[in-house]
Image 1 (cartoon, helix red, strand yellow):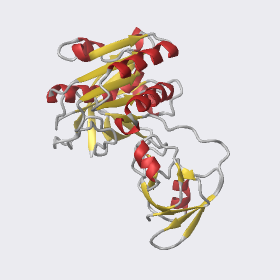
Image 2 (cartoon, rainbow, N blue to C red):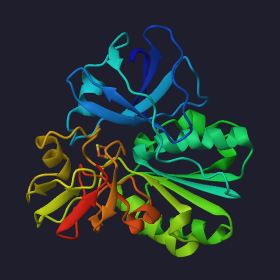
Image 3 (cartoon, rainbow, N blue to C red):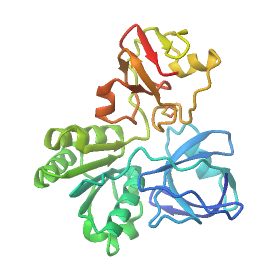
Image 4 (tube, rainbow, N blue to C red):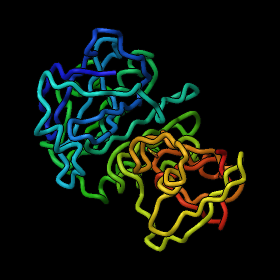
Length: 314
Ligand code: FES
């Protein structure tokens, strides 16, 4: 499917893009928290969270921060993309959905992590469910969607934290978590790794790991002392060696196996494989704690194995 950029606006340090279907056909529906795969003009494929106020079959909205360390995605969108640029897109996918059983939702966003959180906030407004949106930014210039966040009816749910250092931010997060009801509260977090770690650790201590949901834009780094291991294919019994310094995904592809993939950095969820035996070493930012602890699935684009052999459902 192809989308055309119909509007570009700047909001704080981010650039907001409106996309419409090139052929006028309705766009696939999605739930709050979903992201979109875009193929950029430089050939790179990137994922961006959808942040529309109201899902529409006629347009998507994404927001992109210009990252100084950009691997090429945000730099291309900030410098090359124009109104009228056509981009191939995939169907929206969601690994960060709102939990239907919650009595209260606590949304934590750090910096550009506001994008999926914003669409969740709008969805909760529509549902009339209780929620708070805690948005942490380095300074006022980093504040995205300021007008929307300060306008009714969103404003009464929004708590801005501007310019707090790490300690003060951690204290604010802790206070928020401990003043929330312990029963029935679900926590959602998206933002930089350190911020997410703080929220996840403290929320899990207060509410249990199952109540904590995270969306990351980068997977945790590996240990740097990777060991080779064997992937044993369940259906054929074939063994494929994954050497140190090569990903399991690359080894599978080199062996002629067709594994779906997109981001290749452990954040999109598209390469997920079932595990029949062995213990994965999870390095992705997609799976929940429950899924990790089950040892029943792993992301071969970044994750490895703790056992010499990992039998996979392939
Ligand atoms: S390709 Fe995106 S998680 Fe593996």
